[in-house]
Amino acid sequence: MPLKPLPPHINIDNAQTQIGVNQTVLTYVYNKFENKPDFTALDLPCGNTEFLTYTKQLFPASSLTGGDLFTPAKTDHINFHQMDLTEDFPFPTEARFDLVTTISGVMMFSNTLRFLKNCTHHLKSGGTFILTNDNSSNIKDRLAFMFFGRYRIFNLVFEDDQLMTENVPINELVRIIRNHDIEIEDIVYTSLYKKDWIYAPIAAIVYATQYLYLKRMKTRLPEALKWKMYPFRHLLCRHYIIYGKKK
Image 1: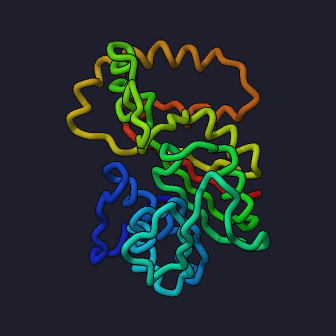
Image 2: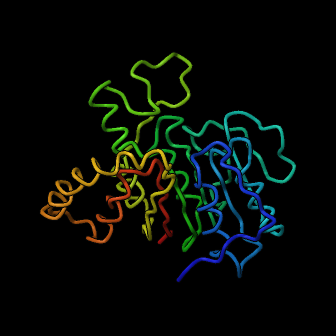
């Protein structure tokens, strides 16, 4: 069933993520919570609160909470917590949210397992979990690694104050999420730039081989999930979104 588009008066910027990510996630949230406008949401890391600001515009009755290492300039529309996301969260252990999102966050800090464990702990049973991450398996990244030994957004040498350091692949994220009572409902690849279509012929050749490899692979994961993780689009898109539900 097609999703209803966002209201025309909502102008979505890319903000601190890739093109189209906020638009895609907000469209999903807009349709998911259309009949529950007073839902509670937690966004980590919340950055400059752009995502939560758009959410508040769509759902004025919602109760929004965000957290990050540094305090953003504007926090009057949310419950903000200055926090180290690699440590236990400063919320009451019984606090639960209808929606937990992490937009382009896991590449910014280590201890992914502990972070996602804490996120899922504070999600209500039946609640919605959304995680987005940069895709380092596309053709552009594979070529960069083959010729330069690095991925697109991860330098070969990190400075002491490097911001993006954690190249967490989708298979690891799927494993952690599933092991913490989240049923993955969908995986969507996004952020396909026009200039990246130049890699399409190479992607077609690579995917022919990868398709046969995946076809023969034996795994205990649901077959549909395996193909959602690795569609043809993953060789061209720069970002992906994982949608899940707490069991």
